[in-house]
Image (cartoon, rainbow, N blue to C red; front, side, top):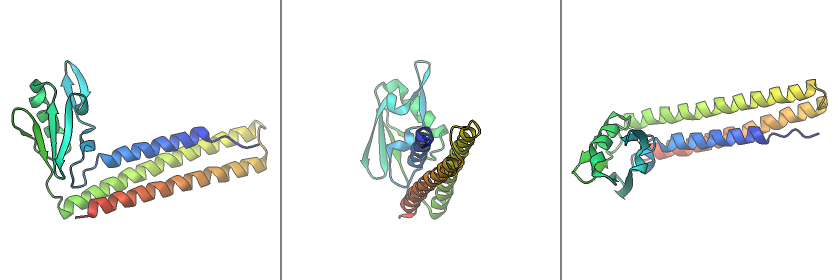
Length: 184
């Protein structure tokens, strides 16, 4: 009997998606609207994502322009960006907000590299926990007599192979992000 690992594979896929979102939120020296995804603005009493109250464009490699649909939000957007961890001072001209991304210093690049390594390690830990849950599931099946010992050993090997594939994906994503961060 083959043990079904679809649910564990789906959880690992979600972990990879989350890692991609984390990596996208890390600024790599060029203007990327994704860095604003975590920023929310109070809009009619509820916290709303910035991209839900304004259009965000990138006229050049180092600038983002935020044009709110309601100009009354300019000050709130400016304040939200200032209190975020972006480290960029927004420029408000009364109609739009400009974010000018400075060239990253060598020290800042190293800090960002440490940050993405931590994100990658967190993803690996989450995947190992998913594998552990899968192993527990297989042991429970064996205890209930639903699988033989040979099936259990094969299932555990399949789970380990699945984990190894995802760890390689994490490592390759990490290497690509580090290369992007260290590129001048």
